[in-house]
Every structure is written in C-alpha cells, then in structure tokens.
Length: 494
Image 1 (tube, rainbow, N blue to C red):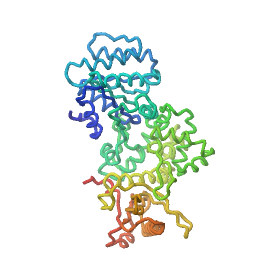
Image 2: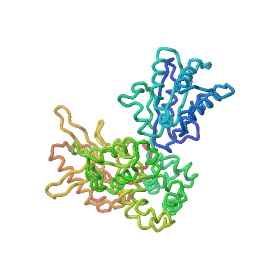
Image 3: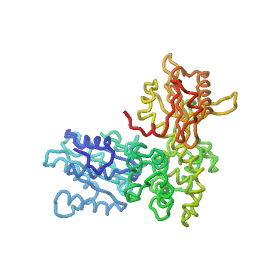
Image 4: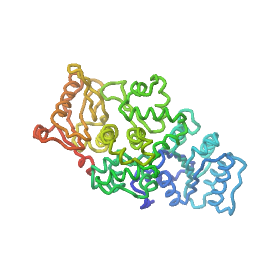
C-alpha cells in the first residue's frame, strides 16, 4: 500500500504498520502504537484503516457506559447493521469484535484500531485482560483480526506490556512514533535552505508535526531575520495555542499529580542542574524524594537519563521536548509579563538565557544525533558499534573538569582495553578557536593516561558560529581533527 501524499516522512512507521496489517497468519495479532501527543499517530492509523477498509474507533474521555454506547454505534456503522449494536458490557463487546475477524468475507485480515486506548482503560480497567483472553483464544481458533491499540499517555501505554501486565508477550508490533529528527524537521518547516534558522527553530518547537499544521495553520518563519517576530506572534503570544502547550504536556500525563513539583524538576534540568543531587538541591528536596518524579518523567518520555561515558555510575538528565526547555528557561520566569502581551520585551532580555540554557544544550544533542545517524561514517571514525554519548574528564593537575559534548567509545572485552574513537566539543554561539582544540587534546591525553586506548581517537569541533582563522591554520594538514559547521550537520546523508 502506497503511503498517502499528505503524510510527511514516516516511511519506517508506515511500512511497519502495513506489514503488520497484511500478515497472512490465521491467528489474531496485536500491535501497540504509542507516542506523545501531536506526533501524528492518528493521521497514520486513520490512513491505514482507510486503505485496509478497517475499523477505526477513537475513544473519548467518558464513562464506561457511554464509551460502550459509542463503540457499539461505530461498530454498527462499520458492519452495515443499520443501527447501533447494543452490548451488555465490554466483555461482550470485545468477544464480538474478535469474532468479526473470523467472519471477514474478503479473505483479507480485518484491521481494527482502538485509538486513545488509555481513555478506555481509565473507565474500564479490565479491558487489557479481556483483550488478552481473546488474543489467547484466537491463537488456536481462526481469526484474521489485526488489533492495534494506540495511545498518548506514555505511562499507560508503556505499562501494557510490562512485567506482569495481561498483554505481556502477546504483541507482534510495538511502535513508538517519535518526533521528526532535526533534518526532517527542517524540511517540514520549510527551513532546510537556512541551517541557522532550522537549528534555532528546532531548539524551540522540536520535531512535533502538529505544531505547524494544527496549532499554527502553517504560519512559519520565512527567514532567520523573521524568527524573532514569529516567536512573538506565536509561541510567546497568549493568543496562540502554543503559549500554554508546555503546561498541557505535563497535565495530560495520567501519573502526574503535583504539577508544581514536576515543573520545578524540569526547571532545574533546564538551568543546568542536571544531576540527581543538583536537581534535589535546586528544588530544596532530598535526593531520595525526587526518585518518583524523575521516574515518572522518564516514563512519559519528557526527560531521559544519559550515562557519563567516562565514569561508570554517573549520569545526567536531559529534557527531551524542546518546547518544555524553552518554556522553563524563557517563558516561565516571565510568565506574568507574557500574559500581559510583553512578548517583545521579554524576548529581547532573554537572548543570553536562550543561548545558554536552550540553544546550546540542544545543539550539543544535535551533534550527538549527527554521529548516531551517519556522522560517524561521514567523519571516517574507526568504530564498530561504538557508544555515542557525553561525559566529564577531571583534570586533577589543573583542578578543573573538561566537558566532552560528544564522544564515541568502545567497551573493553577480554584482553582488549576500552577505547575512544572520537572526542568532540560543541559550541552554539561561540566562535571556536585554538583554546577549544587544546582543551579537547588535553582530555584525550588524560583519558589515555587512565587506561583508555586513544591511538585512533579523532577530535571533532562542532560550531554554530564558525571557527577562527588561527584554528584553521593550526589544524592545516592535521588528519585527526575535523571542523563541522551547521551546513555539514544539515547536509543530506550519502
């Protein structure tokens, strides 16, 4: 089945869904589709259901009885019954649904999509057990049903296949719909011609498709010079749907109750207090008291925990949704002013904070993504399946720490010592010069002294603002040092 023209990108997701829907086995099949809101999951699943003549049901926030009535009405329309099908309870409804797969006349598997499944689970907690019973039953009896359960509440969807969950081990597809990567997002926002615009835009709104189409009705910045005015009339304007979006992203998660605590945790991370101890100190709690909020935010895919590649047991937290980083760093401290329409004044005074707390960390993550998505081959880094990450190297002689923004490491095994294939430094708003190279070279020397094999280690300097002439002269004819600009980060992969 050809992907509809109105679906941008999503080739991998579309092909996975088509393969699942077209499976020829007579046994019932289950797929789980999840992802945060605004990612276009419903677009994908509606398009698939239309092409497969499948049954699509989008749940709403309703009681069990009302949801059952809505389900019966949708099913009656789909089967051509001429009227709503009245079910006594959800047990009968799920039994009837699976039996439809065995009565499918076309010879094709029957695709069934239950969208916003967490809404149903909230009012009908036994629903996963009912689905599990029918899935198990139709492993031996013939049923061509291909059931896709979809939802945006990540804590609920993640729990469907957890250790003791009823559906554990029953799914043949587990698809997580992610935001667009930075290259795809640049094309989606018509910013691919201007890497500087694309990078700043991605640091603010990320790769969420709905922000352009549904929220802003295709109101996009036309150039880097237009970005400031665009921000003031969209993200920073109380008249725009994007203005309160970061708050809603937290409020929509079922496991989050005390939103003030969670916003404080996110604010700590946004301001650079990204270790467990640093977060606890910033919000005035003990480290043990923030374990639950951190776990919930990880389960909701709003933060991620990244290990220090040089120091085992050390890790930092990173906000995964750019709009939340922007809100916590720029909008939340000036919320009262923004609500009264002072967007331009707030934005003028936020340039330094935006560069340090939003664009800078986001650029570092972009550089790591570049390495993960073909950059290692492009830079001819000698590695097999190296880990891409970041870390801190302590310089005891200078009594300082060297932050390595991007590194590719290989674990040691057998008689082989751990090795480093690449060390990188990323600077968003600073022209990179000789001192940055010297610091990176010093980190490589220190790691070698501590037992790492750095014989094939290259050095990479990533810059959003350019490189000094002195640095270019310094590295002339130096094969183990590479300079990577924004243009190279956004260049199409070979």
